[in-house]
Amino acid sequence: MSKFGVMVMGPAGAGKSTFSSALITHLQLNRRSCFYVNLDPAAEHFDHAPDLDIKDLISLEDVMEEMGMGPNGGLVYCFEFLLDNLDFLSEALDGLTEEYLIIFDMPGQIELYTHIPILPTLCKFLSQPGALDIRLCAAYLLEATFVVDRAKFFSGTLSAMSAMMLLEVPHLNILSKMDLVKDQVRKRDIKRFLTPDASLLDDDPAVAPPTQIAPGDGPAAHLPKGKEDTDVDDGADGYADPSERRSVMRGTSFKRLNRAVAELIESFSMVNYLRLDSSDEDSVGAILSYIDDCIQYHEAQEPKEMKDDEFEEAAEE
Ligand SMILES: Nc1nc2c(ncn2[C@@H]2O[C@H](COP(=O)(O)OP(=O)(O)O)[C@@H](O)[C@H]2O)c(=O)[nH]1
Ligand SMILES: [Mg+2]
Image (cartoon, rainbow, N blue to C red; front, side, top):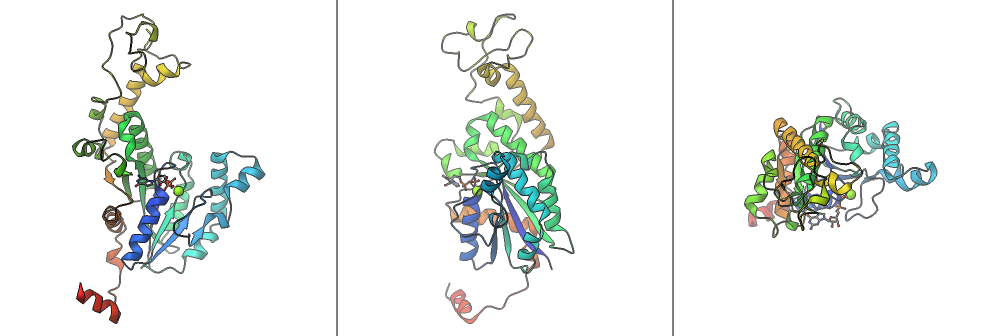
């Protein structure tokens, strides 16, 4: 018998816990069972109390205090500890039936989604046939406000792609907090970000058209008045001075880096975004149907007999 689960992932503040909570409310309203697992050892406030909380195994605060670690190292330590104590998960999840949707609310530290193999090991453990056998999908959230800053948007998209490749589970990419950009960015413009490609860099409002500077000229000092903060040319060798933050973040080599990242993303053609506003029930419901499709939730459900009162309610509707 399979179980079903979704890992809610993405950078800190992307809205993972808010979405998890909205998803639980939506599932409850639709009489579906869910099991909420908090895997963020630093999370403190919940709208819905977790059914299983990593803090009952280990807390980030204790690790930082006792081991003298910072928040990122401490988080990695907590997850290594979890991997050494996987009974904590299997004991709690083993008895769940296929009716449940298990929601894993993940922490936001970027290390988890890029180069260290902790999450792939965890995913393999959860989905291993014959053991927990959870059909898992990943929901990777990125804040929609990032579309205003192309460099941020493409770096966020790159980390989404990195998580996709690292985890090898069905993956949904989601632009969260859509309500925040509704009035700022036109619908038509937002649509272009749903399938990101390098052409988005061509009309970046944050970048003024390049100023003409003769080769060999120094960078900022020779810029026309008013342009100092928007456009900095690199030195004659084509490289920005790395000690100058302004030139690193605005120089032509930074633009070249962004274009290379955007073209890499475009060439893989793996990332498409869905839109989410966690305060809108229909939006949460739409994301849930994508999750259900990914993990083939409905195909596995036994036809259920309705209880008498449910039958009457359905007949009245
Ligand atoms: N406007 C708006 N704010 C949101 C939305 N989702 C989350 N937030 C806010 O973003 C902040 C971070 O959300 P949280 O769910 O804790 O992010 P997490 O770190 O990814 O778990 C909180 O202040 C939330 O209220 C959304 O859909 N719209
Ligand atoms: Mg959270």
